[in-house]
Every structure is written in C-alpha cells, then in structure tokens.
Length: 237
Image: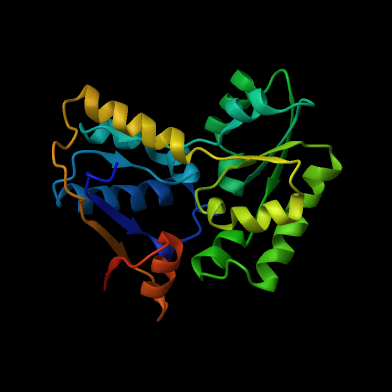
C-alpha cells in the first residue's frame, strides 16, 4: 500500500516482549497506541505476535479505530506441509499464550506441530546483527530440533524473524518451506480500510516515518538496514 502513510514506533528499549508479562505488554501497547492516535492515524497494526496475544482484546475494547493483529501462520503452514510436520519458531510469550493454544486447536489437529522458543534472537536482530556468527549459531541451535523432528514447513512466528529469513533458509535448506504472515496481514489491512471507506485516494508515494526509543547509538542505521533503504527515523528521548 504505497499510497498510505506509515507511522511506525519501534519499542526497542523494551524489547523483547517475549519475556514480559501480559500486563507489561498491555501498558506498552496503550502508550504506543496513544502516541500514534495523537498523530491522527486511521488504523493500528500490532506488528508483534506476542503483543497481539497479550493486548489485542484490550486495545479493541479501548479504541474504536480498526486494529489489526498478528498471529503465527499455523493454518497456512499446515496446508503447505507435505508430510504433516510443522515447526514453529517464536518467542516464549507467544508459545505460552492462549491465542497460540487456540490456533493449535483450530488448525493443528491434523498435523504434528513442533515448537521452539528462540531466546536471544530478537535482541540480535534489534542490534542489526543479521549475518553475525552469533546470530547464525542461534539459528542453527533453534532450527535443528525442528529438522530432527522431520518438519518440512517452518513458521516464522515472530515479526522480527523475516529479517533473517535468508539466513534461516541457508540453515534449513531449500526443501523446507518458510511461512510468515506479512503479506496476509497487509492484505487484511487493505481490506479493512476499504471496508471502512478509509483507503487513501492519493496517487503519490506516501511518507514513512519511524520513531524509536532505542538507546543504541546506531539506532537510525539499524532501522534503515531492517527497512531496506533510507528512512526518516526520529529518536524518542
């Protein structure tokens, strides 16, 4: 949706969410939502599986604008699997959530789902260490148990993980299907905006602005790296 302005808050100071309590995550989500709504956004995307699991219901209760969440792609992975064994890479918080349990109940009954919590991986990505030796070692450590169980399809169950998709593919090999929800969420958001009559009629490329509370000196460089090009980045004090 290149004609829709994108305002993004990177809550790097409080990352990762995977080891936070639901109450802590909800507090962060409310603060960020208030910040963005003050900027007159017309919809919110909770671009984090763990935050969605912990806070999406509370956010929808408090605010009236369209709010789109994320969830691990268990359904499409189960459909894509050839041998009926699906691996899931995610944070501890996501894997322990009631939302994930509900996904398994709804879509995981006819496949074997093997899960792996990826402690420390979000931090590596937040530092921009996408190809570092330590990051690759973590990927090998976390992917191998899934491969040992015979998984032929692996869900990237955290919105950070697609940034290391190529490295994961190198670890698991070309025969393993990697699934994430980025495109599906974008399509859902576009549908909701159209449904609400909120789609932009502009033909111009819209602005993209990032805010971050990261305390790292290279915060702007890391966000530009992850975004894949130059970006306007404002460091929140």
